[in-house]
Image 1 (cartoon, rainbow, N blue to C red):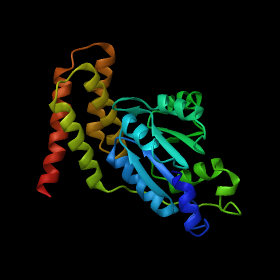
Image 2 (cartoon, helix red, strand yellow):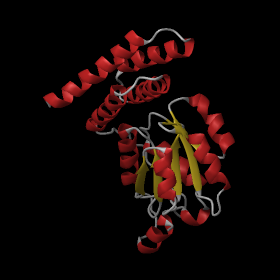
Image 3 (spheres, rainbow, N blue to C red):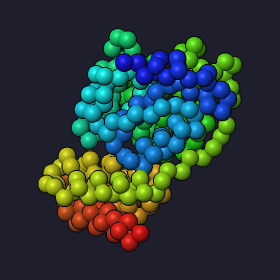
Length: 239
């Protein structure tokens, strides 16, 4: 089922205030905080949003629905977003717009090589950047006519979504802390903490990632990260 066609036929035309009306955007992202930013951007743009939190969930979704735009995070719990981009780039019919997304700018080249049409850099807080990136890549018959200049607006996600991310990674760290788990936790936390301007947790996660890459002992660093995550969950319980 093509979500975008279904919406386009039942809704009014895109406009300057809702330039992405009629589009369905599938966001493949494991961070609730980032997804809330995407939700707000889609809400302000008139687009419908669907979410998958891993590659497996995204592939299951795509067996049933075909969005007009897909935004794929480069680092997911069950693999690289580049693998899904490469699959979708070869699929027929092809999704109109395939975007990579990451807080690590060095992954942009990997996304483009895998077949992405464009790239969104985290943190996602500029509505103008979000809208203009998608509008420039959509087929002409799916753009507003004429192509309006989009309005700049800062997007601020719900702080409770950040707490959801802390709960998620606390569950991850509760299990066996094998190298893959530690690498995922460090990558996930360094990104979402940066986006939420949580400098203390961001630095601790980056220290953990750096020690892992050097093969140095990480028990103390992993315990510190886990403690910082728990302290943020305590704030949630206090509220």
